[in-house]
Length: 333
Image (cartoon, rainbow, N blue to C red):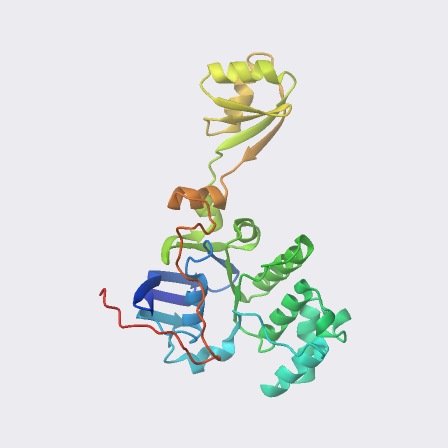
């Protein structure tokens, strides 16, 4: 059985402001195994950032237990914090300094050699722009520099909160490739995101939350299953093929000169049925369920923030290691 890098049990966070209480995290049981990339998926306002802040000691839980590498936090956080790198908020770098100089200042403050700075710059593919001013970096380059800073300590666990927010397609692809490489290198990556496609492309396992509670967790392939929900086919006579398939009880829709067929378990059923009528399929593509369809099935709504979803995902805490939240005792216990 794999070691669990992150564990939470009955984790709960209640905020009170102006006499109003808001449950940000509610009885969350989270288990993140060692190795690979674990997606922490949910719409904006689902409680992802609040959970991460509690794990890092930046916010106090109202109830529940948390463990990192088997040690209880926040009580034993000093014993494991050197094994954790994280990007939760926008990092603060000196705009007029180069990317390398910014990292050198950080490395010096924690007693690391210059060679470590050069290593992480190369790891995030910033070594060729390391001496350029931070002010001139694109948003994607700034995000990669932030990841480089989080990697300085050679952490066993890297926590990234929405790392591709605001990036253009090229920047998203660069961060996605970097996260995938980190997961394959042996680092455990917790990737918090509301972007279903992003999680589906880079994550080995996923925990899906909504309204502060866990909805599902497990390997991405197992959650999505192997069942084919729809099949896209190319056939010489799509009109005739559609007629025969509908008579056989399948749901068929046209997509240009192709057909999307539903109501079957195996594409072979479709090709066999059409071949019996002298209609031969030229191309078959399985359209498998996506994380988006899975999320809608779990929650009954698309995975984005609606006007009815008022659960806060972030809170105005102060400097690292302190909190300014106004958590009241959990009176609903």
